[in-house]
Length: 316
Image: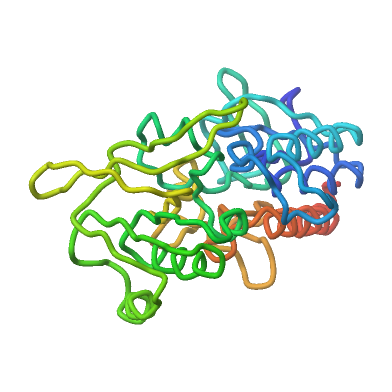
């Protein structure tokens, strides 16, 4: 057996992966956590986090993940900033290839998360977390009485826009076409909302912002007309990407069962995948809630499911 054999390997280091590491390390299972594409998950590109329990005055996203990482390391979990390049789950022990190394494990927890679909323009990256967001539920509260933009034309955009009207004074949906992919019920709901406006045949060419007293903030965007190429400027205090999310599951295609959009399928009421001994937690299998707290909760579930599975198979 490989010298790199482990009881549990956790792939992913967001709230789901680190919570799974916390529970499995306290159960003396000595987990190894591989940080994968985005160490710390989506919270590392989030500034103020006010909806995670236990932090009365809020906490910065990267700081929260740093605290969680130090907590799991305190109980013996090993966290490695290495990319998993290949997995083999056809037989036990499971094989995980990490760069030029091979690790084996009796059990695997997949917590690779999902990534928000973005515009991929430089100014978007510059103001991400400083007025640009991909989560209305997370950040809508900060835009009370302000004007915001929502980019997209599907159900995600309509849902984000409708939610934001609870806080913002005005919400403008920016869509590249006149027709919308959104379902009729979601589109009608948005159209009936007096706070929501529609700007069609337009894309965001550039996010505009300012930097004062060491703080960055969004002031608007330059829009480009998709029909004639003309540009115009629109004022906004915030810009929300409502294009959807992409689960980070390409590594597991043809290995773990997924739905049509790539989210891992787990057995109802558990974190069990189609392969015994392999579990999924967090946004990688959650297309509905996508919150740090729900990811952490499912990380706890995966840890307990894995522990019970190891005990049942006398591998612990």
